[in-house]
Length: 296
Image (tube, rainbow, N blue to C red; front, side, top):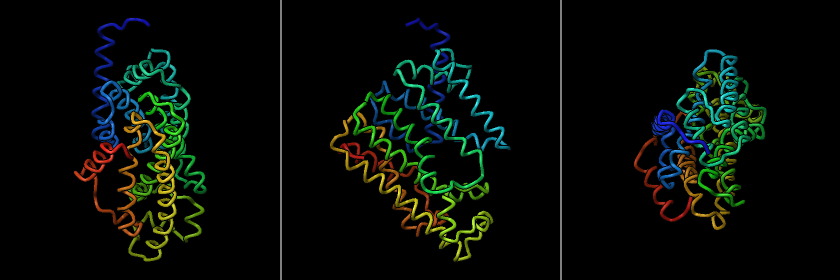
């Protein structure tokens, strides 16, 4: 292993600090979960989550989908340097290179994360629930799998649970984010479910929630997505006796997903009526309580 120069070490420290700050500010739920990991793994988790944030925010940061595809291509090429130990001069890339080296992470899941984000560059809804789940697998389950690698967990039960929690987390987040995406005239609710429920997405985009037909059809579709998320969480928890304790920080987002699904239910599965629960003490206490019990 080659020795690092003082400048390289300073750059990596700065990059890791930047990643931790980005995750704390913009992915606070999962930042909380990283606090239950051992100190040597936290910086790696923050680098990984910051990389994911960078990909997730591309669509909102560009004026045209083509520019987003160019940015995804840039990150794909940047990974060549990350895995060669020669990352581009970018805070997240530098921290990610250090994380890849320290934890001997594989390349394929990173490529999956980038490839799956191509769906963000189209304004069309996923064709069906299976397509939406494929998107959740690529953008979220792959991330959860990498978190287990950082935590040093290879148990098959933990890997399976992480995939289920990753999909559930993504589905729940997309259901909650319907108002955000609708304002940008985008939708991730499956096209076939929208059609079957009679959901007019253009009226949704125009904010016509006072029309009971729009509200009722939206609730019907969101219910389907929420039930799929619940089934994934149930499958993950059915394996908890086979999941080693070091995997817990990667799986704790299941606790917050469960809280959000309850909030959706209380709102009649209308995401526009969700009461804020972000950064509340209840979320932190729920995670801490489950962590203390070894549950997720």
